[in-house]
Length: 192
Length: 192
DNA sequence: ATTAATATTATGACTAGGTACTAATAGTAA
DNA sequence: TTACTATTAGTACCTAGTCATAATATTAAT
Image (cartoon, chains in turn purple, red, cyan, yellow):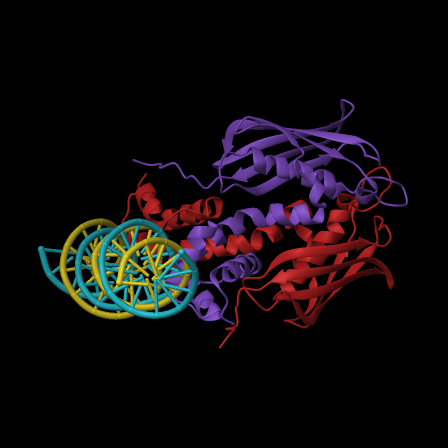
């Protein structure tokens, strides 16, 4: 299974994407090279170490899966405004993919996904994750409509979580609101 | 902020639940005790170490959040059959909480949450997480109906992921199907 | 006050899964 | 042969722990 550097690195990248929990040691066995070579490869490919990858999975799984669920177009390039820890705006056009065929009404989780993704994006922390979500579907959204979600970071920290409020509108008409309590990793020292 | 053991442990548990990414050192400062005391406390409380907690968040975030989203009753004690790596069955009664008030139709993400939770539960691995989900809503479910989800582990491993198929029925009528590609942590040694 | 029990702290040895750095060796091309 | 890249080796160090043992503190009971 010996390959040259280029081939190995291409394959390595895929392997780690598929199995983020694999150690350098296992990779070294797999590619029949030394652990140092794997580490050099990771450096060149800018692939973080196992523990960082696990953390990243910890924080991104939800997002990733929501993205997969809600079809890739929810966030892909649709965030049209973003000021970290302040606010963010994204647009989602409701297509046939988003609706029940029977009544053309958008499935709730798409609205949710848009809002939640935005809430994650607006947090200025690479270890942000949704701790809790309090959501409300105000009116149904149908095919062809354009949903504009606006996220606002509320300063108040409940239980050391940052609260993000998201309001989604269609033509200035509210269709969805969500209050998201977000974990942040940066644990400012307390006590003392 | 000195408390006695009991009080400290109660508070400690909450703190760690709220901030799973906090280290023993930070906790020791926080409670003005030694690191060893924190470790004794964790032992007594059966709280795993930071890295295990991060892993656990990595795998459970999705589940947790889906649960929070889908209201706690989706999985809570509702799994009525479970044979690891084989199959699992769960029941969800659709209540007013699950439906759009207008048309009494259950929101899609509840069905999704039930199915996905079951897919996670059936995997015999404490580090299972959803890599991908291919879902289909077959017919709408309305208030009062009882959804029975059956998960089956499909042996074939696509990209080293275990595939779980979930079929949800109401009165033997299919309402939802989902094919979930699940990560597993246990990386059987390959190559060699 | 003394004993006993519980709680806390200290210490050392060890672990996984790395980083960062230096140095040596292999293989290949000019 | 020189030059360069690729690979391997080795050391010290890091974090965030575990496990085991031992020494103190603190508190309660007699």
